[in-house]
Length: 162
Image (tube, rainbow, N blue to C red):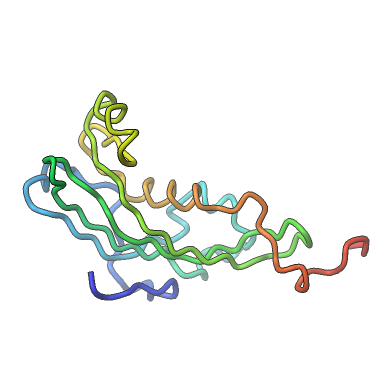
């Protein structure tokens, strides 16, 4: 994928499907380039510090599958977005950009998942479905900082009554 995706991608771009049946595409590689509105990611939506969630840029994603050397299937790509989180210092909104690289091994059974766990990051397909929205949301949630905060200079000094 030669083009880069900006977190300020137009909503007019192709919206990614919530899930894709993997068996329909197992022979040839899949490629997805598109967006997911934050309104379609309920766990992320709960963390947002804005009522105007529809005004925020959508999550942009570039995902592709390819056959691994051992015959399995690798899902790789990039997810980009900017979330409005709450600063843990000043409790004010904080824009937090994400630019995540993904590299997951698609597996169809828990046995394969356990077998590959030491060698790669497996992703268990849900009854042969690849859940794109849930995958994107999971990866962003895993990358969230434990305590998001502005730089120390950007927040009011401690002890000031907020």
